[in-house]
Each structure stands twice: as structure tokens, then as C-alpha cells.
Image (cartoon, rainbow over all chains, first blue to last red; front, top):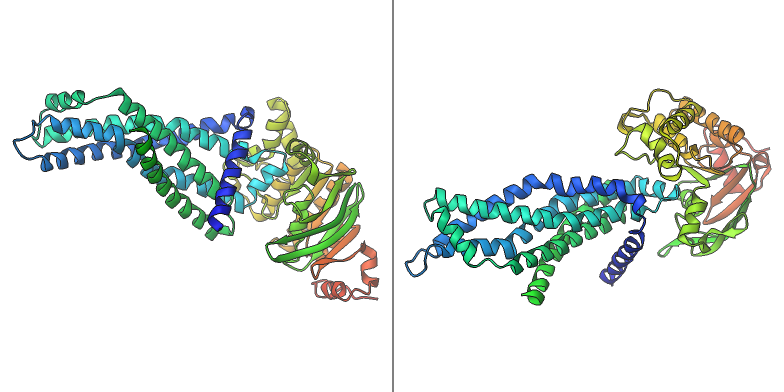
Length: 245
Length: 247
């Protein structure tokens, strides 16, 4: 029963956000601020996630295919395709659920319990337009860029690990990667990242916007936002794979 | 004029108060008093529809604010300034920007005009040279003053104060009380002060609404409080630091 009620409140907030999205002058300034916070400031962690995911993936694939049955460039195919279709989007999203989701829910939760959101409303502001809309839009616009970043650095990480460990030369890795490269895989990854960006930012906004109960309430909202974001990312990942692949 | 008619509010199964009715005349300063947990701040948040009641009406110039569209409501809200209990200053921007915030979004004033108006508001609350400070650097009293400067910057018709002297030392409390009187006189504002500080009530209020036992227990002129036969009100008054003895 409580879950249904929460879902109703979440849907209500999304409806308000959709209606408020036309008030561009209210959130324009915050939108650019959020582009920087969600997009630009996440690049270092996405760089690390990409590089190490690709590197580990290469080492493990080489270990699992350590026979003479397969040509060695197949490692490049498997690593590149896994990164483009799945890993770059999902692992980035799970990391960003912690970094971006926690920041959003803590910020909005603190604003709620310290009456800053009431202050905005009492001045005649549409607080949903001012606070929620720019964060969700930034998630939708910035996550695909972060996905591309993670995918590029993932493949670079795989190439470096393969070359440094003497598993396969760069040229063979790239030959294998090109052999099974399909543009539709990138489009699939981009669709996933847009959905994940929306899920993480909207769930975190919802939890923060309706936080209550002082510091403990903000802590609870942040934990719930992060956990729910991760769960919904995994559910959405499964649903998109079932529908689109 | 603000007219509160038969207002009832509960949170889940917990009744806050029921059937609360009174009028606030233009230019009047009214204090809403009562023990902690009697729903004073909840009542304040109904006056500009930050909260909605279970039943009842709040009429501003004859129109019930709970029946307005969100766009209409936002216009009505701009006629109110609120000093929140903790100031509710935006901690992502500095003090100057906090006060300038409504001007930047709701007016097309130039940067010079904004600067002039912010300094004028800071002067009115007896603060100088705090514009560049972050809100974290401000003391409790300063936060209230900055909150007040922000509340008056759009020259509202109604000024709502939520526990304006709570957590302040007696001297600073006295200064805030003086500011409330100054605001009411110089800006010709209708003021609604939520407080349990009887010193504040005696200094600033003309009319008093006393919430107790989940209802409006007493309403009248400040000077009539002492002659009231309302035992809860007299208990509340005599329990205060200032010991006003009933006649």
C-alpha cells in the first residue's frame, strides 16, 4: 500500500515537472549549473570506471579463452561489444547513482528540512521548475555524453591492458573490435544511458524533495535514493534488453 | 484583509486544530501564541497555502486562496513576505544574492537598482557590510535580519514571522521586536507573528490569537488578555518569564 502511495507521489512530481518544463526562464541558470555538476564534474570518475572496466574485461576474457580454438582478436570483439552494449552504460549508471543521486537527494532534502523550498514557494517561485526540472534534464542530456566517455576509455583501457600484458597487440584488438562493431549497439547504449539518467535524477529528486525529519530524514532520503536508483537501473536494463535486443 | 474561516487541519490521524476562525485587519499586527506543538507554524503556512487544510477557508481580500490556480496562487504569494524560524537562507549563494534573489527573478531592475534596494533593505534591518559573507558565516540574529531583509525586498502587503526571537539572546530578541514594529510602521504592513515569547507579544502585538487544546482558545486585543477568564491563557501568560499577573 505504501509503495503504491509513493509511486503516486512520484508520478505526481513527474507530471508537475513536465508541466513546469515550459518555464525555461525559471530554470535556465540552474540548468547550466547542473550540466557542470552532473556532466563535467563526473568525467574523472567515469574515466577511471571506463579504463579499469576495459582493462579487467580484457584480462578476464583472455583468461577464459586461453585455448587455441579461438583467434586472439576475438578478445577485442568481446571486450568492445560488451563495453558498448552493456558495461559502459550500466557500470557508469551504478557509479553515478552514488555520486549524482546522493548529491541531488542530499541537496534537495537539506533544502526541504531547512525550509528553503518553502521559502522559494512563498516568494511565488515554482520550486519544481526551479529545482527538479533542471536536474532531470541534465541527467537526460549528460548521461549519454558520460556513456560515450566511459565506452571510449573502456576500449582504450582494454587495448592498453592487452598490449601491456602481452595478450594481444593493439592492431589485433582493434581488428576484432571492428569486426563486430554495429552502429545499432551504440544507439542501444545511448538509449539506455538516457533512461538511466532520467531514472537516477528523477528518483533522487523525488526522495530529496519530499524528505522530512531533520538530518536523519535527509540521511534516510539519500540512502533510499541511491538504493532505489540502483535497483531501477538494473530493472530498466533488463527491460530494455528484452525489448530492444 | 485576511479572514480565516472554520479551518481544520490534521496529519493522518492526528488532529492539529479544528474550526479555527478569525480576521486580520489591514495594517494590524497580530500575535499567534500557544504552547509548543499546538500548530502555530502549521497555521502560518496555511495563510499563503504552503499547506492545505482538511476543511475551511483562508480569504485574502475576499478570495479563498485554496481555490486559486497555481498561477494565481503564486501572484498572491508574492504579496507575502515570510521570516522563517531558521531564516531559510539559500546556502548556495551569499548574503547579498539571497536578498537580491526575488528582485532578479520577479523584476527587471538593473544591477545598480538591485544593489541600491539590497543596501536599503540591509539598512532597514540594521545590517551593514555582510553582503559578501556566505550564509554560514552569519550568527543566528544576523540570519533572522537577512531573512527579514529578503522578506521585505518586494515590499509585501503581509509579513509573516515564524518564531522571530527563538534561539536569540534577550538583547537581540529586543532588537528583532523593534524591527517588527519598525517594519509595520514604516512599510504599513500587516504583520502576523507566531511566537511563544510573551515579551515579544507585549512589545509588538495589537491583537492576540491563542491556540490550545486543538482549537482557537482565545482571540482578542492584547490589553484584554489579563482580564480574560480563559484559564489556559492565564496559565500560559503567568508561566512566562515576565509574570503578567491577572487582575
